[in-house]
Length: 269
Image 1 (tube, rainbow, N blue to C red):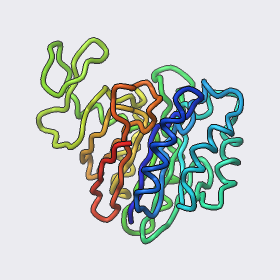
Image 2 (cartoon, rainbow, N blue to C red):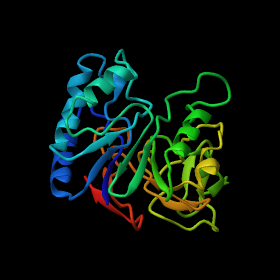
Image 3 (tube, rainbow, N blue to C red):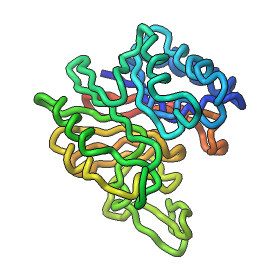
Image 4 (cartoon, rainbow, N blue to C red):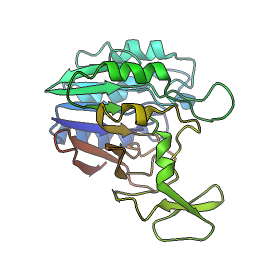
């Protein structure tokens, strides 16, 4: 099965034409069985008015290809609620989205979609966490074999794969007053272009799901395209696909995932 992974379109009034034209060509030219939008389809803060218009601009690009979605932290940063957004998404005949947390069984694969939330309601973390009840839901959907999970924000465990230094080292990024790069013991492909931004609280999602899933796919961090194995799970990070997001000097990309081999193809938008 081939899945086209599209993260962080961030459709908004400014710069949307270029993003939409490029995505339209990529979607039309890429053979896939499913399109997955990994959150932040629309940049909520810039679309307080006519949100539905900017959402439909992106979803219309799918044509008749099946698609599924998860929520990002920016999607509902406006007067539009998640229920409102879902009603628009589910109005498409080719939409397989079925709520905030749901599962799809397709072509022999179990695909699990989780809402990783927006911002933490309390102390101890900036970004929201995947809750224990969501983790239990994901486990309940796996009946033999191993599933693939899709969510916007990466699991906190990724930070354990990084080293921090006060001096620059090759393949490192500057963040929070230091330079970060993957530890020498970590085998990875792709690029670390910025420090990952997971929640600061670890609810044990990766450890709990490791026996049940073979891969997890994320968006959120626009400049990162790395992939690596952790606890036997392939972590697949997708960069921003919108040319109008904060990283204008970073090429916009999407990925094509082969669910059998877990190989990906990076496609420039």
